[in-house]
Length: 422
View 1 (tube, rainbow, N blue to C red):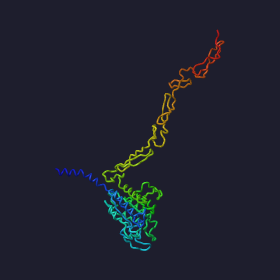
View 2 (view 1 turned 90 degrees about the vertical axis):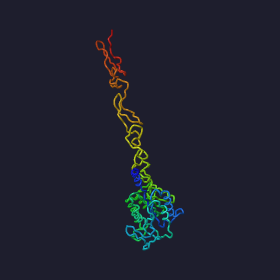
View 3 (view 1 turned 180 degrees about the vertical axis):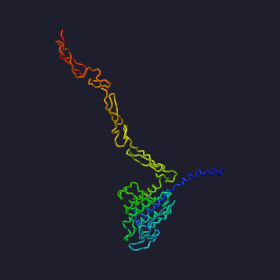
View 4 (view 1 turned 45 degrees about the vertical axis):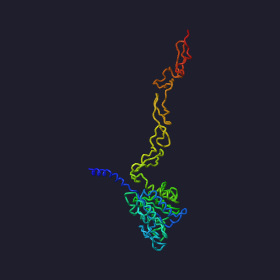
């Protein structure tokens, strides 16, 4: 019986265990440029050493938040290039063939030197020691991105996968149509290869390091990578503040930008998944929102942003509030109204109905109108002011006169009449 109860308990616990196993930390492949220009300095420190320290800092602070791997290009093996877009002149030096070697890799395609996995900090630190005697190390960026797209570690469907490209220069390992190592048309292959990564669900962050980068190509690549930096404007100048790639010009900037990238990858996102693997989905996610009515916040629920509390435009009502959020309050609001004298229209003013234009009762005057709106006109009046009538007698010596109706509606004295005498 006890064994049965234990088995039953395990059965009830299994769904929670299985749900926990569904969370997989994201995979990040850092694609790092190791061309000779990375030996130049910024602030007295070699760019390569700055990049190495920045990567180690990220792994020290965020290593538990993702699975990290590393590709170095040109590939450390020095075995040559293996791109698929035409012959790539793997190891040409000038116009002559030359052997590729580990210390003269030339255009050797980038190679994964640390597979994407947990706890790779030390392995990446060891792999980024600059080899003594390294020469003839060029910049096969598109070839390396193409190779990353074929890397099995980025093709896992049970997790989100990302590439972080860090480069300090221009594509300089071409298809060698004319023997040149840096053909301008090859620059367009970089955004193309990034788009191919995105088509396979692999998004690419692009980081330019130092002042000699191909900002136009990196800008286009960042847009194609589908994770541009905040403030990105695809139509903006690629060397301006609204560029779409990350531009790091010193040690502090590179560290800050890599920190931002990893946080964007590892932090909980509004996508219906448990990104940070804490057992909850889309928890505590809010963001700014706005409507015609102002600014507010909205919350994430089941992968969708909902319930922006900035307010919604509704039909204007007479309440002293700009209900339809057009900048005017209580505008163009009228309604029917009535008094004892009849119907009219009134207008909303400052949240109150006022100005009914229906006639209001007035003291009755003798003008043929029901001034006091009691249903009777000219009550108490003998005549209308100014009206005349004959008066007196015209018999014998008598002659008639006339009376004029006074302003109070009463007949005045008979004037001009000859009255009878005794």
